[in-house]
Amino acid sequence: MEIFKTQKELKKHLSSLPDKTIGFVPTMGALHRGHLSLLIRAKVECELVICSIFVNPTQFNDKKDFENYPILIDEDIKQLKSIGCDILYLPENVEDVYLNERDLNVDLGILDKVMEGINRPGHFNGVMRVVKLLFDIVSPTKAYFGLKDYQQYLIIKTMTQQLNLTIEVIGCDIIREADGLAMSSRNLLLTFQQRQVATTLIKTLQYCKDHINEAPIEALERRCLAMMTQYGEPEYFVIRRADNLEKVTPDYTGEVRAFVVCKIGKVRLIDNLQVR
Ligand code: AMP
Image 1 (cartoon, helix red, strand yellow):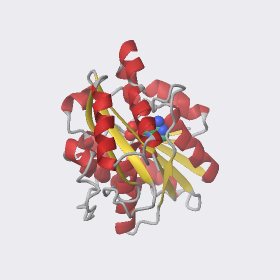
Image 2: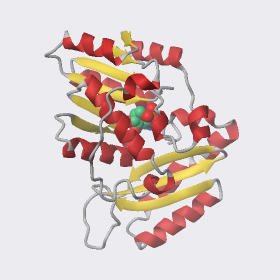
Image 3: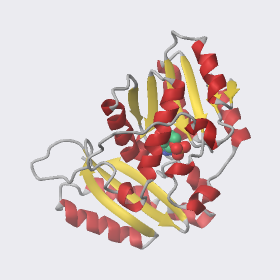
């Protein structure tokens, strides 16, 4: 695996491989099987796989969360090599990524105004900025995002469409621990006890799925939120249309997902599940 610390060197290298299909997986590191599943899919579908590891400051609305974000570069590099990742872009500083930034003109409608958009002001703007810059640097054929960050996935898909980028944005299934907890770099920050309690998220999502046709949506949302307060500090539990995150109206027959965010101790965990 080749490691590039500047976009200049990476672009130079890529210009010597003009006809390869490129699969790209942007990450913030502390890699786990969730990240690796995206890279493995890229490996199957593309000729060249590029991973980036960059803890992007502009998407953190909470300074402490940014400062505490786990960094495990040596371990990450080992994992990337083990699955045959071809290239790692590991920017040496923030400036290297933001070098050629231009204004972004994207209308996200409600996509950045609900759920995480309310609770993490500026977060999606930071995500869009960095993903657009990384897309410009890497010029991928396909880019892979986890459905764990479902709202992010829809926003990147929308941005790509509106900017007419010829990049296929692919959403990949959520990878979970044996007890159902969605894999996350932040799980490393949980104590042993908090780790046990953290399964509440998937248990409540599963409960929601089991009862989706029995109760009115808003009553079910309230019940699930109340269930979670026994174990942690839930920020929201909402049931939304999967295609645009609008509320589910009685005449809507398409895919529906439930979304949850809950703080267990100081760790903010996020998860979602298709419930219909
Ligand atoms: P992050 O490093 O948290 O920014 O995540 C990088 C990518 O990995 C994002 O597209 C995430 O949605 C995805 N990802 C993180 N955790 C999981 C998981 N448990 N299953 C599938 N994809 C994931």
